Each structure stands twice: as C-alpha cells, then as structure tokens.
Length: 188
Length: 182
Image 1 (cartoon, rainbow over the protein chains, first blue to last red):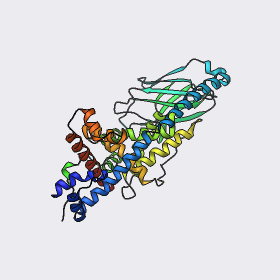
Image 2 (tube, rainbow over the protein chains, first blue to last red; image 1 turned 30 degrees about the vertical axis):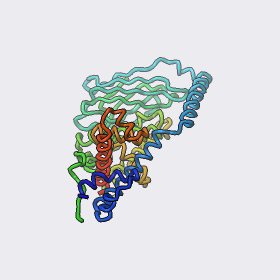
Image 3 (cartoon, chains in turn blue, purple; image 1 turned 45 degrees about the horizontal axis):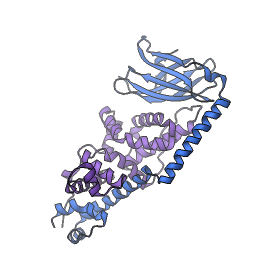
Image 4 (cartoon, one colour; image 1 turned 135 degrees about the vertical axis):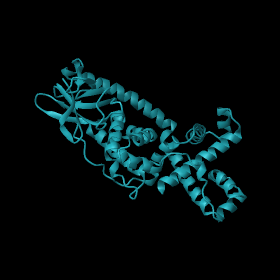
C-alpha cells in the first residue's frame, strides 16, 4: 500500500476496522504512527466534547425541572425581599466625548434585590489609540471601576455589568486602561 | 520507509500561536481571526463557569487576550492552553465577582490545565477551520452518534462521500493538532 493511500485511511483504525494492508504499512511508517497518535487524541477529545454536549437524558430532565423550580423560587424571593429602590425607573445616560460627540448610551436598571445591571451600548468610541476601555461609575460618595471592555474597529460594542444597588449611581465615564485620568467619554 | 504527512491536505491559515503572537504585536486582523476561531470555545467555558454572566465574561476574556497576548510564550505551552487558562480565570473572576465589582486583577495566572481539557477546548476552535461538509459529518458522527449510513441518509449524499469527508476531516484535525503542538 502506498503511503498516500495509507495516510488517508488511517482514521478507519479509530473504528477498529481490521485492515491488514494498512496495519502492515503502519508498522513501518513513522509519519503514519505519529498521525495515528494525533488521531487518537482528536478522537478522545471529540468523545469528551460529545459527553459535555449531551448529558444523559435523565440528567437533562432533572436539570430542566430544577431550573423551573429555581426560577419559581427566585420570583418568590424577589417579591418578598426586593427593596423599594427596585421600583425605580431605569436611569439612562448619554455618553459623550469632551467635544460633545455622542458615542454611546448606558442604562442602569434594577437586576435583583442587591444589584443593578448596567447595559452599555457604544457606537462610536474613539479607537485610534486602542480598542480597550475601562468603565467607571460614581455617586456622591464614591467611585468604582465597573469593568473593562473591548470595542470593535468601528468603536462599537454592547456590554453588561452588575453594580451594587446600595449606591445612587449618577455618573459614568470611560477611560483607557492605564490612563485613568483621561476620560474618553462621560455620561450624567 | 520515509514519508511525510500530506501537508497539502491541511486547512490553510495561520496557527493559533502565530495569531496570538501577531495579536501581541498589535495586529487587529490576527486578533479578529483568533476571536472568530475561539469564540464558540470561550463561550462554552464562560457558560459553564460564569453562567448568566456569560456575555460579560466573553467580553472580558477577549479584552484580556488583546491586552495580555504579549505574555504568551509558545515555549511554555500551546496557544490553546494559554487561551483556556485566561478564559477559566476570567470566568471564575466574573462569576466570583458577584458584586460588588472589584478592579480587574492584573495578569492571568498560568496554572497548569489538564491536557485533555486543552484538547477539547482547542477542538471546538479547530472544527471551525474545517470545510463545512467535513465539519458536519464529524459533528453528526460524534455529537449526534449517527452511523455513516445514517449521516449519508440525512445529508442525502452517497455513503462513500461521508466516509471520505470524515476521514479527511479527522486527518485535517490531526494535522492542525500537530501544528499547534510543534
């Protein structure tokens, strides 16, 4: 058997196909032995991946039941303990550069009893000097780094963060990583 | 007998390590390609660890990859291993953050990860590099447990084509793995 043909048929050995000709070639060919070793790793990884993708049917049913129960419990707990602030309307912020150009919007809304969720949609952030940014939030008492995010080449992105609800977040601003004193955009 | 693998059958494109190194040098095109290649794999890690914070986690992972790519050293491990480490730590931080948010920690720690985990993580990205028909056949065979005849029936193609695409796809994956392990 020629090497080219043997090499092409090597994956058959993963299925325990008894191919005497192929096995004879394999014994004498280091390249095919290497390839078969790699195929074995691929086969194992695919099987592991399959196991992750497909939990047993029973487990899937159990997970679905648990999810429904958890969701019902969460709604109940939220009803019991949600603070008055959760009834506040979402706060909206327009993010503008120092020159006043609108580069994005952000909305802060109650997420659960202890947290608010901040959704930022940027559409024109200045990316000439880099696409990485840091988002900050502040109230009258304190300042907090909310998180980092990455815009695409057009300065667009959509990100969501969580913040503690026990602050009255009234200011947002964006800086570049490593240069926290220069604001790229601010929103109030 | 001296013989070489059939390199002409390997999918084209730069290796993950090359893309990561080009990203470190500031290539946005390389970063975009790496992102396209690894997005499903990273999304899976984020979903598994960070749960409902998956989207934030994904953003954070890619921001870190962009910012920290210069820390990648192919002599210390494969690109997939480095990316998986970054993804796991970021996902754990995202999940553990659970408000109040803390400042993003510095450099990703390079803890060892299990080789089998790296292979599985890498494979999700590598499958994206296969031609559509090879990828479909492999996914149907492994993830749906379909026999080759069942795949042929489902895709309405001859059994010989299924066998041939499956072989070619697996061989290509093995060659990509070899390239990444080099």
